[in-house]
Amino acid sequence: MNSHEEFILSPSRQLTDIEKELVWQKPLSHKVSDEELRICKEVKRNWNRGEMKIANILLEGDAGSGKTQLAKALSADFGLPYTKVTCFADMDKTDVIGAILPVIANERLEKMEPSEQNILKALYESDGFQSTTERLMTVLGATQEQAALKMKQLLKRLEQNTDDDVVEYRFYPSEIVRAYQKGYLLEIQEPTVIRDAAVLMALNSALELDGSINLPTEILRRHPDFIAVITTNRGYGGTRPLNEALRDRVQHTEKMDLPSKEIMIERARAKTGYKDERVLDVLADTIIVLDRTARINAIKGVAGMRSFFYWADAVAGGSSVKESLYHKVIYKITTDSEEISLLEEALKSRGLLAGLDEVEMESKKKLNLTRSR
Image (cartoon, rainbow, N blue to C red):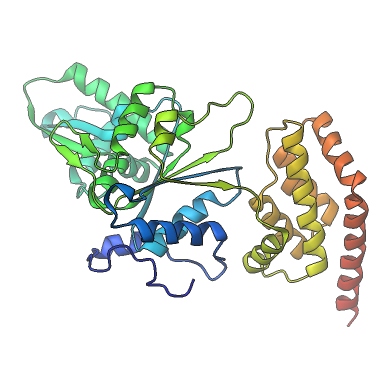
């Protein structure tokens, strides 16, 4: 992009030191894609146009197509703190909004299980900057889903045993509420997995441009800088499509596919430091054919950019081209023997297995020449 300042949305906004740390820093290996440039231009152009504002973005595509990387890059482009929420099947409204917890007396706290004591103490001592789930993830060393489940169990136990020693109740916001209130760029990963329609309805109303979230303590208005980037995998057989009401609130969508072969190679070079054009060319062709074949045959796995990077890196480190193809790419798509045969046949019919053998031999020759010098 021409200038780092070109797409900053609120130049006069003063971020705190903690918020500055949340603005993503692009690594040197980051290559600006057409999608990134297009989104930046559209958002900037419409930013002060009232009802025409673009503040909900959908990135839909295969795993490994760079959706999260793009969401983070937008944080850097717009100058907004980045945060994310990873959705899960049993998500409920407390995961969207947050939770009210009683602040209980020390005598009662000491009678509780050590793990519960640790959780409550950590929450009581929190500065309100981290969300409840984020705080528990840190304290417990748990995933987002595990932390949310632990929180629900604790709430249930406290509800059953609440008595007169409760001093006060305190509200602890979710990551969504924190981003919504403070004006961050929030990546909402995989809302398609959420089972409960009520949770989706809560998200829907929050994503209105002039939306609000009804908290137990107050009504929160959407911060003018808040941007929601929804990232979701393209639907395979058996998966739910993105909720229609949620899709309707999106003002810009990108279909995330594998980039062109030239960009694939350029990114792999930047990511891995591996410079052999001939090898990278054959590896990229192989990934492209495997990706298409998997889709045509309804094989659920994906041959994406991540697989390409790790495969290229393994080859750069001296691994066998053919052997690492299975461990870095094919087995990531599927370990079913029949499906593997379909993938192998597709590579064979396009001369790519022979091509991989050739670059394998060339790599060995180069390695032997280097050793003999």
